[in-house]
Length: 286
Image (cartoon, rainbow, N blue to C red; front, side):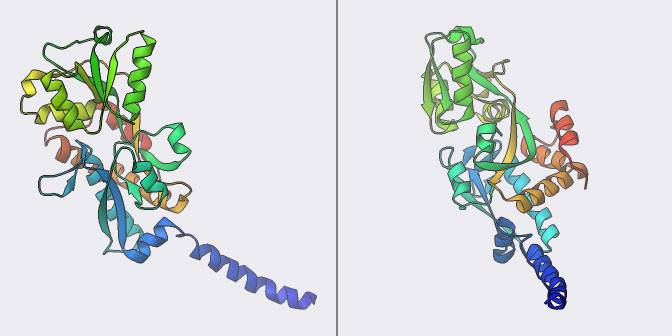
């Protein structure tokens, strides 16, 4: 019996080794390898990070970043034909789309928080922004001046939560009007239906720049928070998260991130010193 067990042990070891190797790509990476498709979730109206262009093609900083990540993962898996399929999501359902396995990677301006890390996994940080607000030229320049006024924010976002906390902390009683999309909110601001519109600073800058009456809209010099963005994926997908982080590290180290930044924010635009520092710190060595 002892001789038999001694003979079987090496066979079991080899078998277990093969099982371990076979499970290395288990889950999302295995699905991507089998289908040749990486499904990226994006919001259609989250400029400049994600949006549906006039030609119907998804665009934006996070969309381009996901495309670059997919290209790198294709090299990691030796899948030259890997394609990216973008799936529309909303502010309300984006996390559920991940949990239900309807998308592989959320390509969005999603703030990484401890509460959200309990339900989805995150990549290394991809961007840092903060909540600010847009006003008309004659609008209130300070949070204290919002007392008794109506202000807007997209419902269900971290921005809405930060706004409530900020107003409560300075005992300002303002009515928060929830919006479902950014375009509608900006129209309400222009018409005077709200006195200020709160969102991420980069998003507001892009929206003001592209607004038909940009000269009439200002970005307040006030930030309520500092928020780290990251790409999100299904909880517990260690091999996939590692592949995404490896891809992002390659993109940051090579300087490709600056090219993507310029494509989205303007050819002469450069990442802020804050972002440059982020990309240096976030880059992981092999």
